[in-house]
Length: 203
Image 1 (cartoon, rainbow, N blue to C red):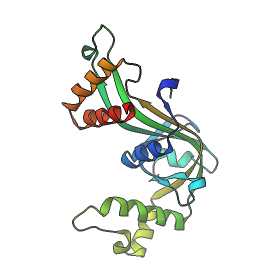
Image 2: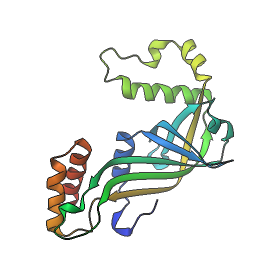
Image 3: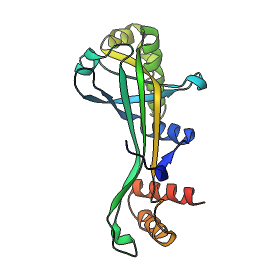
């Protein structure tokens, strides 16, 4: 991911927010050929000094059949994003896209059965707790879950490099910047979220 200095962020809290709110991300590898799988990911911060990404994909997935301990992968998270029309500027220019993104390069460690079980328990709890009648892993019975686990390929991604990009029209003069915000506030949810982000970094 190309990140001009103006858009580069080292804000760990922003990274956490983007990962938490956009957990359905891309797992990319190039062991035998370039492969990519959308997968649910979580940031494990049990040890804050050694945080890592955890996820799982289907064992039947060709990508799972190529991965082994130590292989390098890329986790790609796209946060809020929206179109920016050049008609909102007071001069002729090109249109663009504002967005937030995180890319994490790291080496994988295969999960053992206990780690995979704990991962599925946490992942299920994260999303089921909002349901009217939540179905937690403990409610499914250990025998059933362990049987289903045979089809899951659990991995941990230990970060080597982390890139955080926050492209929010920082290169625009104040009048154009404010006009962009005004237009975004009258648009869809993603656009309004970018507007709020732009207002926050202006303070």
